[in-house]
Amino acid sequence: MVRVRFAPSPTGQLHVGALRTALFNWLFARHNRGSLVLRIEDTDVSRSSEEMTESILEALQWVGLNWDEGPIYQSQRFDIYRQAARQLVSLGQAYYCFCTPEEIEKRRLETISSGQHWKYDRHCLHLSDQEKNERLEKGLPAAIRFLMPEGVTEFDDLIHGHIAVENKNLEDFVLLRSDGFPTYHLSVVVDDIDAGITHVIRGDDHISNTPKQILLYRAFQKEIPQFAHLPLILGPDRKKLSKRHGHTAVLSFRDQGYLPLVFFNFVAQLSWSPGKEERIYRREEMIEAFSLEHISKGSPIFDLNKLQWLNSRLINEMPVPELIRELRPWLEKKGLWSETFLAEKKDWLERVVVLVRPRSRTLVELADMLAPFISDQVDYDPEAVRKHLLDSCLEELLAKLKEDFKQLETFAAPGLEQVLRARAEKEGIKAAVFIHALRVLLLGRAVGPGIFEVLEMMGKEKTLARLSNLAEARKMIKRTGEVRNG
Image (cartoon, rainbow, N blue to C red):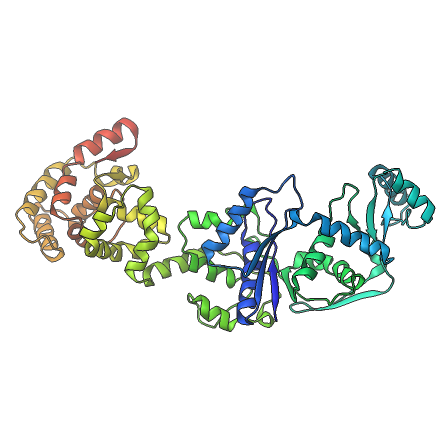
């Protein structure tokens, strides 16, 4: 049975590249009816934190990834790693190294100064049993190094194909440090053996680690898993994706208002595609279509514009009740949500969502667009006020339009449009003068949905109240340069 693992280090937030690794492991396990093991690689005790672990788990759960076993914490397995290292010593596959960092650095510099390439010189390999035992009995600090065999280490990567490395180019790497802490190579191989991992799917920055780990499997006389190394994700400048490209932590995208299914789709399609159509796929569709053989070798580009497009598309395609459920946390943050309100105005809220969502790329933007309809306050854009509300004739014009609106028995878009255009013609002005001013007074911004639909959804009472905000808006913009009015 297929068994894969995802093994993040809790020294920071879960980032896009790590999420893609988790996602591909999850898809592969689900496609093959296998198991995904979650392992927390927290051997770096000084940098690991419980807070980061919780953040990683939260990010995985937000995107919709679950695991079958774990989390398994490496920090709880130190004795197992130490025993494994000593086992390799007893098998003649590893040896004790008593060299101090200062001694190694001195010999390294001497080797380099003579024009030669440095790798550990096996200084301690040639100690006699008596010398080793005497040093161990004295309690001298001792690391354990792997004894690199001769020959070539080869493997067939499921993405990159055949890879071969001459062992003479690899040094006798450390398995157990002199302080008793394991190195990455030892802990990862021991954990994968114990968990029965059949496939290791990870970033191709680990390709150089693979020959060493294959040799450890052989030293332990265990079956070697298959390896698949994913191409690195690049930023728009075609350099490795990093903080300089902006937000890369997974939860930051949640906090910006991206939908979890959209982010799942976006990350899954970095190096792979579930189909020829450019659309949002259900997770079940991606599970059925997933294949390591169809992962591209080329490095994908992280395109924020595509993510925004996908998010906007799902916002506009989702059933409105489902979209409102996703919106709820954002409306709660603004103090605009109550169960009573939803019960009384459910149909109205759904109609407003349908009206404003075509202009919203994220849930944050959608909540901002909804706020003027629900709240008694409006956050005015200063530039919109300066552009559309400072005309000296506007106060008199809006007062007349307000009286026209008062006379309407039915406050609906067709009648509102008719009244507005009639008033504009009577005053000898373009209807756009009214339209722009109304949009700013009602929504606080210069752009938005069709003004007549906005008026209808805003309702007569709220519309008439906001038509009276002109003088105060002008005062505030002159006083502070910013306008906030209710």
